[in-house]
Image 1 (cartoon, rainbow, N blue to C red):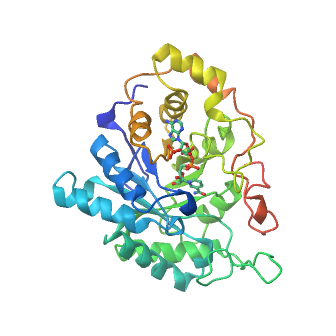
Image 2: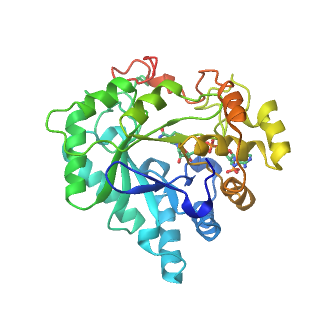
Image 3: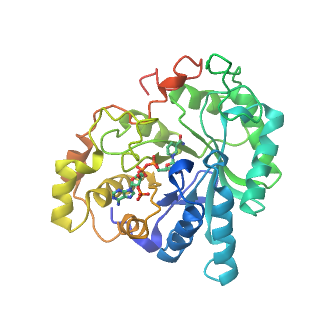
Length: 326
Ligand SMILES: NC(=O)c1ccc[n+]([C@@H]2O[C@H](COP(=O)([O-])OP(=O)(O)OC[C@H]3O[C@@H](n4cnc5c(N)ncnc54)[C@H](OP(=O)(O)O)[C@@H]3O)[C@@H](O)[C@H]2O)c1
């Protein structure tokens, strides 16, 4: 399969389509200057990115929105060219909170709809404005999850025209089946955003998702920023991998470009994050080469089944998704 830049969208089961590469916009607020996100989104649009992955939790949706508005005003893009994915955070799973949370996102973005809205994690936390709720002893405050009720509230948002497509993130097979088998299901989830890269290739979840027309969106496709506060850094850095670098040499590409090409070539959407212009450009230059079938297989064999993003601090939540095999 040879994917060209001009033809880089994949169809979703609801009739919409998703650009196969998007710009991730998560950046530690403490390590990011105000304006970096907006500048990066504008550069990305000029380079050709049309898909942006964001979240209320990332505290920069207003910057993404400013950048998109500016590029629309300049005449560089139209609203319908842009694909924005937003996320419903764990403290907003209670059905009455779903639409207000999405409306808050729309207000920050200055848009009247998002293209995709996904449940960020299957675990519900104590509802309220505290995004990481804990008690006075530091213990996490959870809430009983009712994923089907949350899903029905999302379906109502789609009916109201606030979102085009609905999806999930960090859902395991059982949690996907819970939604897929929900009595009276109106809209199926069209995407599942999960960690996915050559060291964590997700063969079983990918197969299950394909069987159910759910497109897998790969987060941390370059192996994360390796911030030890939330990343399992006991695994070696992905981009130092010998095979990825030797294939890069063969194709005059970088290990990052080979890692991204590997996923898009098997139909997995990638959302690499960079706020550096030269890397934003580099990560988009993955449509002018193709890995052989054998090379694809040898990259698949790098899988270690070890996550960089384990979310272990929430492993005692009843809906913690990563106890199951997949
Ligand atoms: N749903 C979820 O639970 C979830 C979880 C994690 C992430 N996400 C989404 O997925 C996006 C991507 O994941 P991520 O941010 O964890 O990690 P990533 O995209 O795998 O890696 C980002 C890191 O790699 C660096 N980088 C980018 N391009 C590079 C290149 N060509 N060469 C070398 N280094 C490069 C970036 O630094 P610079 O910025 O300095 O270039 C940054 O430190 C996030 O931004 C977010 O939108 C979602």
